[in-house]
Image (cartoon, helix red, strand yellow):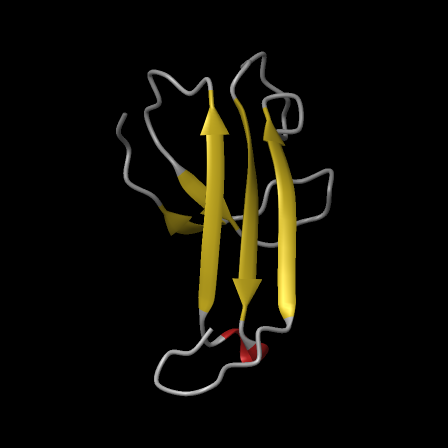
Length: 82
């Protein structure tokens, strides 16, 4: 992928999204997956999100780094809508 030059897309993060995987867990039946590809030095990122069963959401965002048993801080707020 080129954006005014050649970028080294060296970091890829993938996550399965579900209420049960939330910390703390929720009874939500919504599900999805997310893929984030970051350029070296974290100077640029591209995110791909797929969601199913989402209804009546009040907020949406991407959390930052955390251990698997914790919730990281909100890093990227997302627009809410259908």
